[in-house]
Length: 355
Ligand code: ATP
Ligand code: MG
Ligand code: FE
Image (cartoon, rainbow, N blue to C red; front, side, top):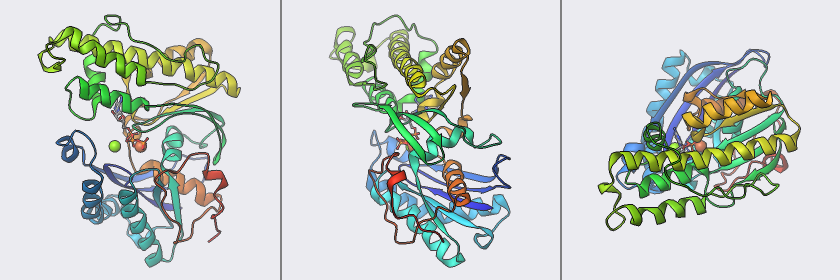
């Protein structure tokens, strides 16, 4: 089965081609091309939806050609076409979705609309033979923080989520407050490595609550209120370099404390002995290394995605396309995109049709 996947939900335009010889073997990534618009949006301090969709439309044809060339295939060789159908920016989703549908129509092949969050959730299993196993999945991305009981492909139960800002959003907002370039996550990760995580005492919310829900808005506000106390007029640009590193390290320690505590809590509630993490924040080096230590201690198996699969990419979209296609789950070409698509609604979507 050769599958082409398109990702265009936010500010990455990506196309990947996967070849699968059955689920006992990990699929082969024939190509995975990502064109990031970060440099364009950075000038505005965040993603501008109109700019995102225009750039997707301008870039996608060339990226598809590149992906086909690198894979040594043509659209006519593709068995199934998939694209992110949500959640994301509606006009951005429409570009990738319509393109995949047009290719499917022209090739006379089926189409799969992929939930972007399911892409992140299952991405840690892409390079592993045997595919996704029942486990507790933590999705920590720019827009979501989810603790999911994964019972099988398409069989998900939400055990916890963020009540306000997503983990990645908290990194990005705090990065902005500290005068760091967008996106803040990688910058904070880098600066925190040389900072003192105990220099500032920041709050960890909902730690005693029995649920796996998290909240990062209080932490974000705590960083905001700290700034005027240690700077002139709260302007972060005058901060001594070491103070900036200490702020980043203390903030990052608070986020990772919360995520690790809640992941283990959700894991216990689920009864699983395997934990996976995914999404852009799963790139974070402190999160990865502390989670590894915690999982070793608890004798839990930790499944981490490779770095190239953590932030938005099309390989994860092609992977879900492949898993759905093997189960006979296709969508009709009039399937709409949904900017607010939920992970757990995927199960109840009645529009699945057999090609
Ligand atoms: P969603 O998938 O929820 O729609 P998204 O696609 O924007 O959101 P991703 O592409 O998965 O999210 O991840 C981007 C996020 O990951 C950004 O918030 C970014 O700051 C964060 N991020 C990337 N690298 C790191 C890192 N090393 N440490 C912390 N956060 C990081
Ligand atoms: Mg992005
Ligand atoms: Fe994402």
